[in-house]
Length: 192
Image (cartoon, rainbow, N blue to C red; front, top):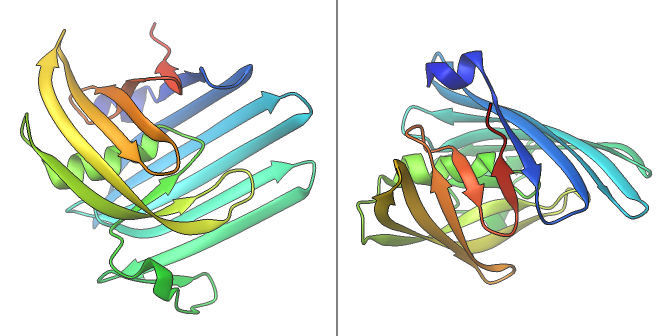
């Protein structure tokens, strides 16, 4: 992961007229930290989201904080998880998220790294999971069922199919760190 520490990944969004994101996976003393930001312009809607996700060493989400700046003003959400039980930033339990091990911030391909690293699938395997899905820019949180299927590597990249009932099915290619390179109909990594 040292390459992302020194040179964060950058993506252009392909699902909106203008969108650009930058993110990195960083080591933490007790796990990993994802740091990213994304700017989107679509018609009259303009927003910037910045987020941090902290995980344990097994890539299970422990905390996520997302902040959005939009025409509605600044907003933020903080979620914490321990042993599959979630609470908000004020410590109130979120029973609808019980059992979720990952957070998925909707505006970025970076949070796909969490289940890809945590699941450790072999080619041909798939796994159904539930995640704490954070909509951007509204910051509404809901439980979403997702499926990750790993395919054989191609052109030096690992291949996955991602599926959820809200958005459908997408093909992903990821680098050796599990960070998205291309996300069908959503984002593609900018390369030097």
